[in-house]
Image (cartoon, rainbow, N blue to C red; front, side):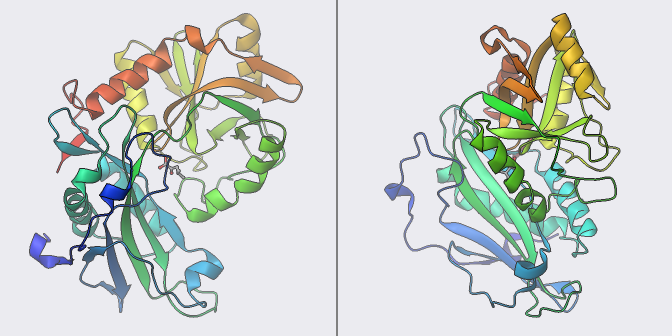
Length: 354
Ligand code: COI
């Protein structure tokens, strides 16, 4: 077990916090006073450093820049009304991080470095955790290959880091979504289930095309038939049809196993909904819409939390939803927030106190 003394800690001389207004902050724009940095070299992790947030000095031949061995996580810390800070389900992110690392032929990050490093960093910068509604401290652990060589092979050196960003909601407004039928995000056997940087870079072109015609994000469909829905933008997606919440299953390996997705499944079940994780075709969605049984559509994600989808466009068929009449997604969001902000008992054991 790594103790505090095992981290090399250098405190920032001045806090930047006084220069930043934590009211209504945009997502991912500001970073706290400290960061964690640790190098992997000669088959082992070196001493982790927590130090003032600062730029990195990197070689132009850095392997990650050329071949994309780069993965990340998104985690959030919250404060309750008494000012106690806690992180939402970080162990789940830790496990997923190492699943991504394995798929990208990168070393496993030890639990002590990931969890204790995150805990100490968040504790040091805990005054940065915003307290207002829908705000939190976004925690971004990431790892990239750091060999200075442009031969195509797994790197021998890696850097693992954690940075923190006080943040407001990611998607501010209910979203208009374009059902994508040309470009694909993931295929079975690919890296769709990994939180690899390239998954996000490769999504940008299709998203930009959808934006040009007035849509916020795309709803990805399967690579073979463009029929089964997968993920939506940076989120997992849920459809409530009748009294059943349906979300695409993980077994194909094309979908990120979202921590918020998993939490939503548990809360929805406790709210009395049937939840099915299964293949969901766009035909079934359209049929339900025509029959009036398609009740609600929303995305889930760490950054996005629960984001309402107010419109779906598939070919020429446009579905517009009366989101002001919805009950499930708003109740789900309220329940999740109540647990995160300590207003309701943490019956699921999700909050990791720092
Ligand atoms: C997250 O929800 O943490 C994500 O990964 C989305 C991010 C790319 C903004």
